[in-house]
Length: 418
Image (cartoon, rainbow, N blue to C red; front, side):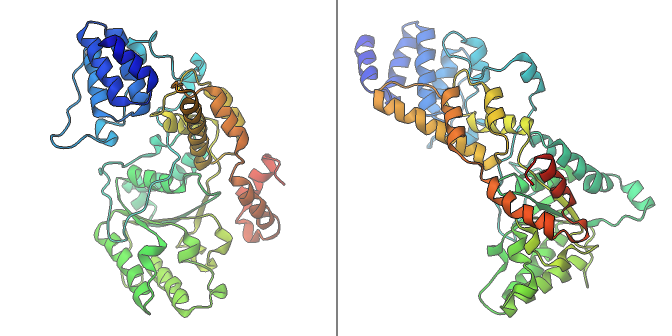
């Protein structure tokens, strides 16, 4: 029976149930190593498959993961997917190492990675600080300068109520995050909310704008009323250039009134905004109404640049965590992806996976994703940040009134993009 199943699996390597049946027979026959190898290949095809996970756990002598009756368990319910690290320690000769990293690089690697951005919610739904999926700055890979700026300008005064009272610091504030698309501005905003232990309210264009006259202004007011009721609360205004566009360029009265209402809410006229922290993000800060950036509103700005080396390492590990890889040299990949955004890095991993999948389909033999796949994908992908820097260069050089874009100008000179 085992011999016949081996032949069937060789003819249909992507048939996960068939491979799991073979692995079960091998385990019952006392061939534990062979069963682990078959279960590992099954998991490379279906990382969240509950039967494959249970069989792998049984083959390695551990407790089987519990699966709710009546439905298969989703990958997110299993603690983040299959634990490759523990398997590598137990069966290093059966499953090749996933990463080929030097000891020095392993010691320097951040404890956690992120970069990808989190999705928004309804204007009236508030995420609690201890809600599933909540993050903190430690979950943001790299970006040391960004974290230091946030700590000095925003977080430290909020964490020290005695000093805040001594210096007369109000529990209100606004910070504008700007930079190329796909670099993690939304993720950083959620991390700030986690650091403050505050509720998080994400607001997008669809949550506010309405076709009926007066409804957009009312929606904007209700957003801030919700935040005041849930204080301390971080209000995150995504794509601020759409919600707070320059009124001088706006033809529609309804849009101008919406911007006016946003200004009123930021000022807290008739209401108290203590405990309401406003974060906003935009790719084009030069299109934001100047009144939104005056002192007392979104008066502090923070440039969020493409991820640095440690951040790219963390982001790549995050996007490869559920994929079948072997001996991937992340050091080389990090070097050739300088200037890539977090979204670009996710695209590199996706393209490399497609290449390996296509080869497996053509040859009928499953193979792991390797360094060559990833380097080839990185070479074929052009960083999506380049068009943004081309536009930002002109603004920084010729429209830098009051030194608003001095930080961007310094980066462009350092990166030799001028």
